[in-house]
Length: 147
Image 1 (cartoon, rainbow, N blue to C red):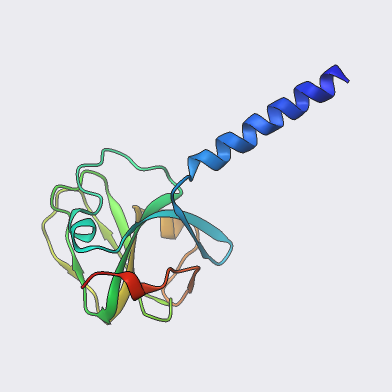
Image 2 (image 1 turned 60 degrees about the vertical axis):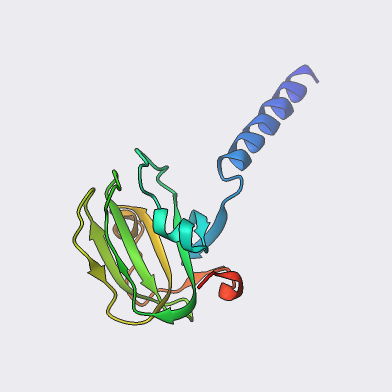
């Protein structure tokens, strides 16, 4: 009985710890892979993005949401960690993946109209077998995104 209580207490602690790791983040899936993202749906949030961050957990990222699908362009000004980004169409399909280096002010324009942009640690897409043509599931409705 004592061991059962200890086991249940340990299991409860583990579950609460794992749940708090992604607290306040939105869960996206691409195939079988999950990524937990902060949402950037306002102009100031999209402009600041992941600047000044020194690290980011491997299964996390940032999702930029726009009120309409249009050509987008990203750079790495004041961004300290290497990132990969996916340009995503309004129907959730990844149409372009780009690797970007820290502090590089080179513009990385999209080749088509993107409603969403997903930034993750550099190499995350490759390591997880995510490719152009894959669909991102559980994307938030862009209705509330600022113009």
